[in-house]
Amino acid sequence: MDIVVCVKQTFDTEAKISLAEGDLRSDGSEPIMNPYDEYAVEAAIRLKEASGGQITVVTVGPEKAQDVLRTALAMGADEAVWVDEETSFGSERLVSEALAAVIRRRGSFDLVLAGNQAVDDGSGQVAVRTAELLGIAHIGAATGLSVTGTRLTAQRDADGDVEVLEGELPLLVTAQQGLNEPRYPSLIGIRKAAKKPIERVTLEDLGVASAGAQLEIADVALAPGKAAGVILQGDTPQRVQELVAALRDTHKLL
Amino acid sequence: MARSILVVADMRGDEVRQVTFETVGAARQAASGGKVSVLLAGYGVAAQAERLAASGADEVLTVDHPELAGRRSELLAACVESAVRDTGAQIAMLAHSAVGRDVAPMIAARFAAPQVSDIVALALEQDRLVCRRPVYAGKAFVRVVLEGDFFVVTVRPNNLPKPDAGPFAPAAVRALAVQLPGARLELREVLQKTSSGVDLTEADVVVAGGRGVKSADGFKPLYELAEALGGAVGASRGACDAGYCDYALQIGQTGKVVTPDLYIACGISGAIQHLAGMSNAKVIVAINKDPEAPIFNVADYGIVGDLFEVVPALTAHVKALRQGSAGEIR
Image: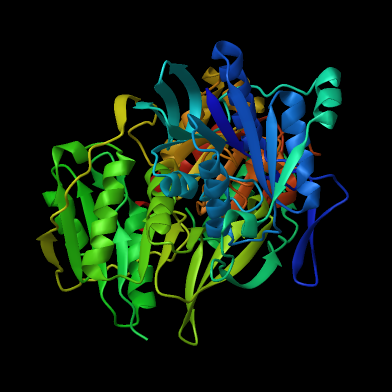
């Protein structure tokens, strides 16, 4: 099976975010592979372990973004393609066009996997747009996945319900938490990955025009800090009474 | 500048969700006198079409077909695409729900249009439409300008202002003819996990439990409090992982995002992933044994103590209050 996995480098979810000259920065910590994309890479490796095949990982980002390709290679992916393009909030259309172009260029593929959203912009568009551009159906937020021959079955999270969907390959599936437990790259894997080539391509190589594909961002702001709350004191009946009074009188909630 | 806006009704079972009415309300403002159309695609939708016709929209388009029962994103996308062409809408607005997350990017891609996902506010600023949306798991917000021929927007429930109750002149209801495509995906089974009670993402009050609840039985007092408050019960990932409750209740970056008026966190430590799902609640109450728990950093009111003592006391108090002043209950 020929599998393509789309991955993105994001800030570490534990990192502290600050604002400098109108731009968001995450302080101190190293960027990571988007956690939902890790589930996608792991799913690809398990499918390959079960029935053979070839795994290509693709990312769009700056030079540093190659780190996530190395991680995926170390986990067990075979090939990597880096689209050398800085992205920002609102470049979903551009990124999906680049990914679709990379995938189309391969000629044939059976399955495209990606995270169901990236933890940085949380917009959840790129994978679905890519499926549309490729003319294939997608299954979003999969928590279970199996392939028998050319038939794919997935469980997916639909607002808390679980839906079981089935379709013929090629398909695109996005990964939700619960799909699997991603492995850590082994030392041998890391050593092997260091020697594997990463193919660099540009939007120009792919014939993707960057103009007009960007949202207009008016401004960026940190979430308003909350005033320190009140820790209620006294015994339980006193504290409960005080809480109820505040909810009723100050907030008009009860 | 008048704008034509299409709102796609979001369903929970056979009912149109509240987020759709919130979206119609916001669309009326944003349209600046332009036409607001609502698309209702489903099976047996006549009664719901009537509700929408009284919501302040100018017209309701219906697609009624047995194949549209249940969440069928591929088929719904075909209906939305037809409705966009039919109405000439400049903005298509969907809910940021399982269906909206599937369908909105399909429409955006088909029209090579930008999409703004998961908006929490929509405002007219000198005739420019500006959306606000969270990024970095709610640690920051960006404001996006909607300027162009066609946009797709998804809306987070419980964030846009409560819609004007009307009464409004009834909207025209008309059937939209749509050629449904052959579905490439087959829906084999739906395992219903969500309870029939209050919709978690639309609840005004959420009582949520974490690892501190200690067992499935431990959730009982939380359900009692939620019932007294007319709210819904949620949970942290920790409580779901420990098997105390179903993942359908999970609140956080991976689970549901909730924005209730009142959020009561019981035995939840407050990991960043959990905060991403609830930190915009209007009033947050935290009950936890550990005074160092990070949940207290975002709480308006904190009680350091045993939730099994505090929660039942709170329930009793709320019940007494409601019985004592029945006339004042909202």
